[in-house]
Image 1 (cartoon, rainbow, N blue to C red):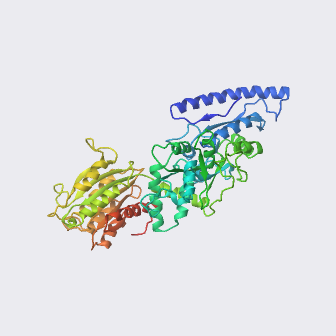
Image 2: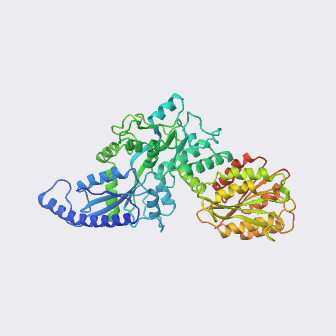
Image 3: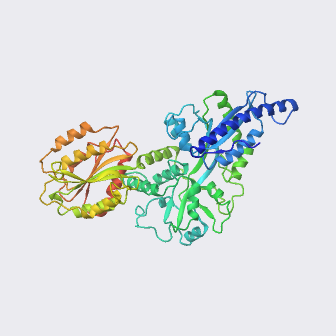
Length: 575
């Protein structure tokens, strides 16, 4: 009888299958009672189970380890292992780690219908995160079912080309070319290195940790890490299968490389190919994914049965199955059985500086840097920008390219008496950047047009303070919980005193700033003679930042520095 095979599927199909699974388990329970009776009467092999109802254990397993976990559960069920005189029957389902985590910590959205009794994640980082976020009934210990080192995977023909060009795979390849000192990759480098989405896959979490470890610490390192996150977001993928399929697709990228667990390369190459995918080790050392089993059952009897299955997975029979599926053994000492020529025979060198603490810190960094941005741009078109607006708008055009399609953006221009008495005029309303505000032109296109079309009003004074307060309130009124909410001010830094004073503005900002709904003010001031102290007071009131620029090209560093402040929020030092 083949048991324990159930893959996660989208609702409503998932609900239908789960209902079917519950029916199957109920049927199995009845069959198990009859089987147990035959064992007792006829003296069948294995420990004798009583005729009582069996203990049913549901186990959620990460996508890549789920197939072998299902096979292991079938073998385990055939042993008729008992606990407390009752047979233990295990059913494994394929479930993303993030979904299981949300279930265990009590979230309401994106969760499983029933809490699992055991969990095989693709990284211990998920287990630690679950405990930190208050998951109940997780014991202190866990056992490692399998291991698989991260590798750089590409087509064999490309690997040979890289070797001819003496290009070794290394962790700095995950950064944009600009961070590595060039505008674009050279012909002997990958033109893209795709990483798994860290919010969904353990390999993505480990990649962020490696990137963070390579760049070190300090302001420049934070900017580099921020650039990596923005770059990785655009090319991250939800699973290893689609990433490796993209390596075979020659329609878009010319020299693609993906970072995946070694086992996924083994699994991918089970399908014959004239140009198979090969696994390459990074020269600085790699990180090995562990696949931990943790007991999640709240019922004592079920928890004991779940523990029995966890112990069995560490035995010789289960470990043989794990290695035949392309994984390394749980203790990492034994490699895959018959891995094929595309998998390195030698045990990869690990990067010792990346500890569990570093991995957890990297996951936290990603969670702060990755969320999309809800941003309103205030452009100063007063007389003080006569010689500066061209530079400022050229910078804005460059900066616009840094924001992904998930961004919400709007734009106002400000000068005294614009918008009748308001001191500002809305040019693009705050909203999704890849959707039109009205008509056919999406906001991104309209914003790009405005960076060339907006002109200075040479007879109008600056209403900087009033515009900042109005813009701050606008972003607060359109606050997005899932986004970073920012007011970006591009200005000369001058206010002509016809409205709020700086002191009045500061009082209003400090009174209205809500730490539970923080709106950050970032000011980019162009030109010489900028009142740094005065403008810094304004940005500091909202944990924002001030940047003084002279050239359009500086905008990339400015934006990365502003985004990097998410890493220290809400305790950033004044810039």
